[in-house]
Length: 305
Ligand SMILES: NC(=O)c1ccc[n+]([C@@H]2O[C@H](COP(=O)([O-])OP(=O)(O)OC[C@H]3O[C@@H](n4cnc5c(N)ncnc54)[C@H](OP(=O)(O)O)[C@@H]3O)[C@@H](O)[C@H]2O)c1
Image (tube, rainbow, N blue to C red; front, side, top):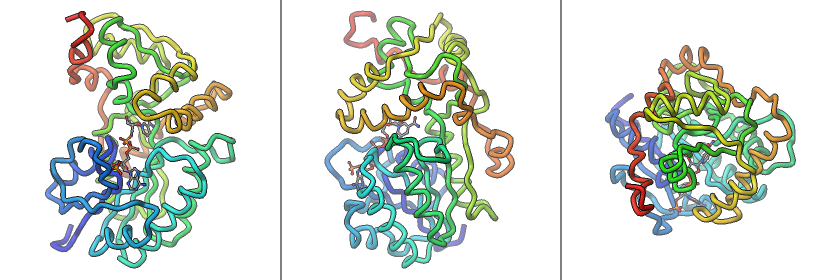
């Protein structure tokens, strides 16, 4: 880092961007957030100065990039192709003008090589191609599923109350579950380590586990018996939709619909040795992450406490 490094975190009010903003601040970096400022509660960015604007507004994105040397990009859970193309093109234009030294793009999800007909994957592949082919010094991070999704209003109460871990994954599918904090550590490393330009990394946690193995790690972490329940995608979408709206929930649901058709896919297994070597980070074992979460908060108001 030089004196003049300035970091822009797109999506800084979200869980992923918020974790990145916090990690950058903890590392002593200058950080600026970017969101629409729609009035949604700040999710713990530690009060970073934030530029407000819409990713669809080219001038707002340009202004946000003024003086920026490093950018962390996570696109919102929007799955319309034209809108995502506009967001990505605006970011490319602004990042070129700012002459950024590194841009890290978090695709939200693993990305199959070919079209899937599910917008959750296809829009992320399109954005990835726009950013990668821009000639900018881009590092692409493809995360699997976040552990934090389970510590959520749509999963937390059932897990804490009934000991059931419902998730819309085929029971035998292996996933390298990753925490938001480890995503942030990976992003900070990808922003700063030498020689990573134009690489794509399949990041993830240290264990690639099936549903039953995931539940076993949750049992170890919580000290009580947790069982895995493969959930219907429709049920998942309806629970998620209550929090983030039906459109975003249905878009996200596409990730799991594709996996239901491809239960032998290894796409959600990280190349952990490469991640450790290239990024120099060690990700958190599942049981340790589980043990650190205050699960009891999901019991409040259910009559179980
Ligand atoms: N692989 C996975 O497991 C996976 C992947 C992605 C997300 N998720 C989960 O989904 C949930 C939501 O993710 P998240 O909180 O990181 O992201 P998010 O809710 O999609 O938030 C995105 C951020 O972008 C901003 N934003 C939205 N539309 C914008 C626009 N048009 N222009 C500029 N800024 C815009 C939002 O703030 P404003 O509203 O103020 O603009 C917010 O700061 C989390 O629980 C996360 O774990 C999981």
